[in-house]
Length: 476
Image (cartoon, rainbow, N blue to C red; front, side):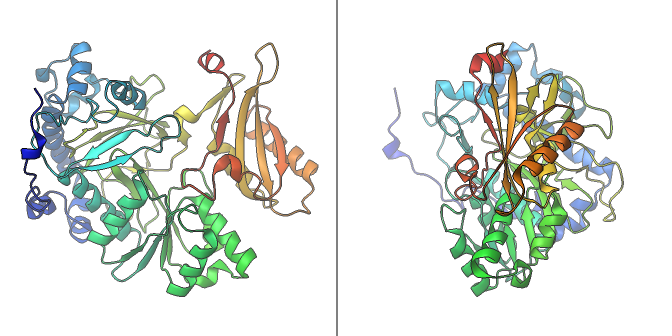
């Protein structure tokens, strides 16, 4: 029998969270850089081990994990320390979707049952929902506040200081990025967020007007939209973006060319890695030596394609993340499908935290074309090298004959109307063949023509791959 929810009295946010204790566990930027950031490797390992075992105790109470681990033959006593983490089977977004099929909101991976659990202030954010319903992720006050602290660390490490104006050009809505950035800035930096959102929320021309009039100091956004904003400033306002006084670009570079982006704006571009489920995970500091993983909050592993073994030092692998702080929907060996590698050189900061070099692409966004693994991000990096393009591209893979041959067409926007299109297409096709060892079809189109495919002017989740093969063909 369902209980009468009208009789439930929820605690206030302040009552549900011991902020002072939490700040001791997860210090904000200034304290973190003096203490946690400079922990020795042994200290970090000890802290991770303690928090990992606490997360495991919690995860066994979450039906999603209990069900999966029991089916795999695991028992709680099998995991005695962080050294045993490889005994735990990884899971991916596809497993979360299976869980959602049973209950589209209170899926069993959330670990909260509204029919029996005591009420607490909860926050809902979702995945982008590019196919089907968006995937819900629910956060308790503690979960969200740790994420806010990590965001505050990120922004401080990338130069944001009190009274700075930070323009957020990420989508604002159900997805996490834009709103989480605002919370982190508001609560833990002393700066102010200018939440213009993507072009769908605030037209790009208006964003440039506000940026200029209010003298914005930092911009948060994806590289493609930052380039688009620079083009609008230059072509529609006659403004040199370098004269706007931007002090920093906070972005997710992937394989995008940081140098050309920095040249456009006359400002450094700082790389970051995060996911909807956990927020900011790794961040490039002003030392520019790779993205430091917040190892007091996460365990990061790089696994081979079979998801069985860790790759050798310096090799690329698929990132598998374990959170060390989440109560609702703890993430234990979550296969992000993102490919990276650990930096091997030391950082001038003296920090022992592991660093990611860059994000090379998504393993689930990879196309296997005539035996060759092709990442759209690698194609984009080559397009950016040619100044006859404006850097905009989209990849379309489809079956082109009755024998099942698959071809990938790269549509690329020309920088201007007077670019010789056949010459550019031929040269790019040759460059792709040399770099990727497979022949691609190249088509040069007008500036702005690809917006209908990529969503550049309307969303921060820009699409670079369109798969027109049938499900049967893809599975094969």
